[in-house]
Image (cartoon, rainbow, N blue to C red):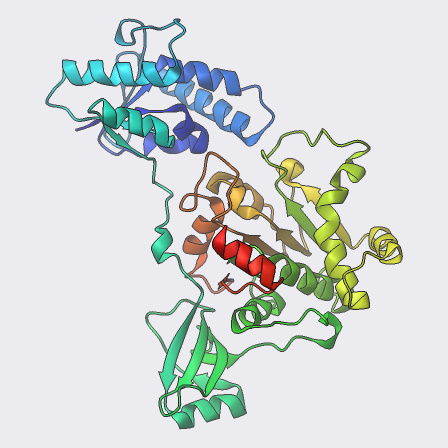
Amino acid sequence: MNNYILDTNVLLHDPNAIFKFEEHSVIIPIRVIEEIDHFKRDLSELGRSARTVSRMLDDLRKRGKLSDGVRLDSGGEIRIAFNGELQGHGSKDPADFQILQMAMKLRKQNPDVPCIVVSKDVNLRLKADAMGLDAETYDNDHVDINELYTGHSELMVPEEQLQKFISEGRLPMEFDNKSPNEFVVLKSEVEPSHSGLGRYDAEQKAVVSLIRSPEEIRPVVPRNKEQHFAMDALLDDRIKVVTIIGKAGTGKTLLAIAAGLYKTLWDKVYRKMLVCRPTFPMGKDIGFLPGTVEEKLNPWMQPVYDALDLLANGRRDHSARNRDALEESDRIGVEPLTYIRGRSIPNQYIVVDEAQNLTPLEVKTVITRVGHNTKIILTGDIYQIDNPYVDSMSNGLSVVVERFRSYPLAAHIHLSKGVRSEVAELAANLL
């Protein structure tokens, strides 16, 4: 049995972390409780997590004194270390120092029991290592970034099968190692330059041809095979959850909004398109900008204006006429994620941009708002994260990709080729 000492950021990231150490002992320093108390009044997602932790710990008090240790259903134990167990309580010592000081003391008291500091703060882990302590990150929701599902693969087939697929738009096949809606590049065994693009339909047990981009969506057209894959997933009404990961300039936001405009304004499959973006930090009041809420959100509306102008005029100017029509149509809205909790959103096409800045809990909050006949698209660049509480492996977007990949209602694509401009592509690769 090990002693795991939790840092504040672990509990704020996942309030249920206290129950995920199985038969081991979980120790929460009193200084961590003080920091949790500091966050509990925030109206942000961090504040909600802080209040959840406090309620959980208060419920556990019914089982006994937390200072002595309370047995958990998993067979482990949770304890709050305070007073004599934590030297420097009430002092001006930094929180990191007090956590490490307590870890040193526990290791000295029980040299035969491994004492491990758990923190999402890399600097605290480095300090622990320098002091000879074991330290780990909290990786209950981590995804191996090197093995992250790309959403597509290549398959060599006989030339006659490739020609059959091209002519009929369908090639019966059954795979045990492919996810539903995984995109496939079929290549001829005779001449690899001969190829066809398709998507594995697990229900039909066949590779089916991609949906062609309608004329109304032009001049936004796929410019490489990955964008063709993404457009197919965006236009297929049977796929309800689409995740698109790509670096800056790969077209992920433009494709999502262009497809949403088509499905909402022309095809009329959905009553409304809703574009959401986290005004980081999530839940923070969107102040600092003058005017009403609508005026504050104008900068966030710009991707919608760009897509509408391209669709309507075929150029990148920002037509006042289109902007007025967009606002007056009441068919398209842009909202901060701040106010999404508690809602039920039916019959809408939802685009969540910059989803890499959301924690898994925040993404869960967003996706569980999806109502009947609603499609949700999450886009982002997992290598450009502003949220200090997540990284490329633990952010909500990466977690959704892996958790949803085996379900027929979901599809994913990773965009790797920049199409914005030669300058943007070079900057994304070099800087």
